[in-house]
Image: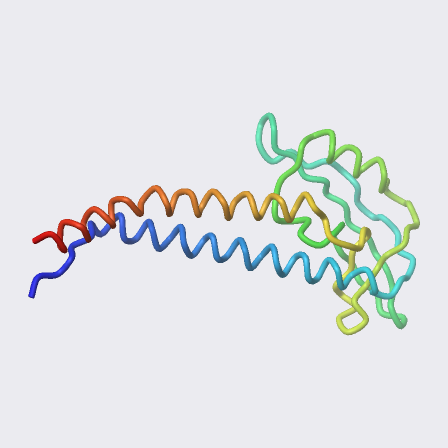
Length: 163
């Protein structure tokens, strides 16, 4: 019996793009779920201890490097999470500078923390639509790449079936 021979690189790339698409979809779901849950987290007061713009590449990629300290039940915590999904992407210089301006060093601010895991906290609770759209865009790109490889697989299947 003959078998269909799909070129190995096509097969592996197609599986890679499928796995990445599933991963990005799962990440978007988790970020949305935790972001939504953060709206009901408990509040405490924290202090910004580091607030600076970190340049990742020479021109276009920046990151707001903000650390804050807070206490829950007399235990101190240090965090860098501004909102759920904060570390998934890089940002523009303007966005990073705006965040640093909004949270300058020494500022006392509200901190929202998970009551079950008080070390998990954010300064801005809720779902960040920019992060979700970034993950969904990446997922769509992977689906498109997967789809572009599908005709090669179908061609091999049709050749097999016609013999």
